Structure formats: structure tokens, C-alpha cells
Image 1 (cartoon, helix red, strand yellow):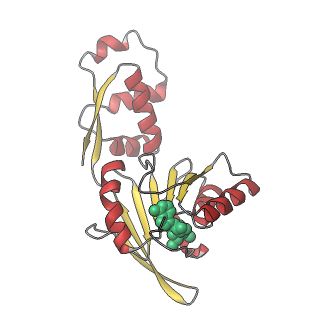
Image 2 (cartoon, rainbow, N blue to C red; image 1 turned 90 degrees about the vertical axis):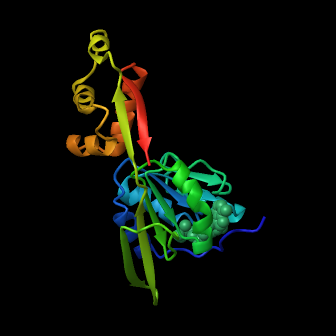
Image 3 (cartoon, helix red, strand yellow; image 1 turned 45 degrees about the horizontal axis):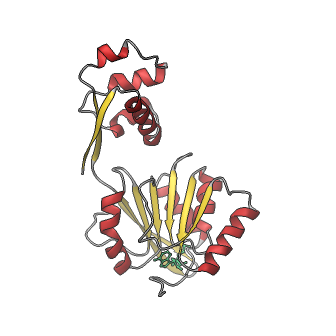
Amino acid sequence: MPYDVPFVPTPEVVVRRMLQLANVKRGEVVYDLGCGDGRIVIMAAREFGAQAACIEIRKDLYEQTLRRVKDLGLEDRVHVIYGNFFEEDLSEADVVTMYLLTSVNERIKPKLERELKPSTRVVSHDFEVPGWKPLIVEDLYEEWRSHKIYLYKILGLEIPVPVSDLEERLKSVQLNEKYLEVLELIDGNRSIEEISYKMQLTIRSVRNIVSELMKQGLIKEVRVVK
Ligand SMILES: C[S@@+](CC[C@H](N)C(=O)[O-])C[C@H]1O[C@@H](n2cnc3c(N)ncnc32)[C@H](O)[C@@H]1O
């Protein structure tokens, strides 16, 4: 099968800057499209405390990355997938990194727009995503040439909506204080991003709390406005 992009590694200094610009936080999920030798996911796990995954279509590179991950004892924090990134589910990502080509970015764009949650950051080395407006474009001189980093954010809001008989249902449910504080902020207008900001929690942990509250029958739905 022809590969969409040849293997060219991103210099380590550029990788670190990409992850910094994307503001990767401990526990967040980082996906790299095309592992290469695994340097992006390895740094994301080791230096940023992320849960990382990468997808690689070339068997030799997949095996090389898997070996590095095992040698470093990172198997529980880095998931190496042998496959085509056009066919894998990316919806768990908080951050997506790419070093592809403008033409490939253009082809993957509809999948990113469809699958990624609002507030997911997409950071691309050297090639822009045509039609998207970057939050930041940074130039870095490294290994005898200039490297561009494009940072994007998936726009839109996820708005949790409480059930109409919340008061009644709360009488039969035991919730800890943090869950109660989150629930108090859920009014069908506030977004998960706003709640995470107010509570000083990561978006991921607010999403987890919301899905737990949903299981308990206290949240009716999460409206997604893209
Ligand atoms: C330019 S390299 C970047 C490697 C790494 N992300 C980095 O920045 O150091 C692109 C990688 O994507 C892989 N690749 C190309 N097309 C792919 C596809 N459709 N699915 C998965 N991997 C692919 C290539 O084999 C190569 O390892």
C-alpha cells in the first residue's frame, strides 16, 4: 500500500515546542498521526504526563516505535497502533499532532472536523490545514532550517443539560462534593469548557464527571454546538 507521507522525523526541539504550544496537560490524550520512530508520543508521555497514541502504516516503523516504548517501560501510557490514520477513531484525543503534507491535511480535515470534540487542539509541523484559521503560527530555526508550527483549536461547545426533575432525583442519589459543585454549574447554558475553567479542572475530568452524572440519570444530554 502506498504511504501518504514519507518518514521524516520532527527534531526533538520542535516536538517539545509543538507539545508546549498545544498546552498538553497531565492525563490528557495525545494522538500522533504517523508515529515515525515514536518520538512525539514518547515525549508527550515522559515530559508532559500524557496518555499518548500513534498510528503508523509502515510495519518496520510500527515495530521500531513499539520496541522503544517497551524498552522505556511506557506500554501503559503509549498505545502504538499498526494501521492507517484515515481509518482509526480519533475521538478520544485532546491533542492531535501531525507532520504530514498540506494535501494530506486537506484530506484528513473532514474526519478531524467530524470526530474531534470541541476544544481539541491540533498542532501541525510545517504544513497548514487549508481553510482553518491558526491560533498561533511559530517559526523555529533548528537543524539548519526553519520549521513552522501551526496551532489550531476545534471550535464549538459541549453543553450539558440537566434533567427537568433534578431536585426530585437528587433525593435518592449520593454525590461527593466535587460532583455536586459541577452539577450546580450545569444549567443547560454553560459549556464544559466554562465549567472546567470555573472549577479549575481539566476538560477531560469535567467530561468524565458529566458522563458519570449522566449514568446516574441527572443529566439529560450533552448538546454539541459546532
Ligand atoms: C513525516 S513522518 C512524521 C513522523 C512523526 N510524526 C514525527 O513527526 O517525527 C510521517 C509518518 O506518517 C506515516 N504515514 C504515512 N501515511 C500514513 C497513513 N495513512 N497512516 C498511518 N501512518 C502513515 C509515515 O510512514 C511516517 O512515519
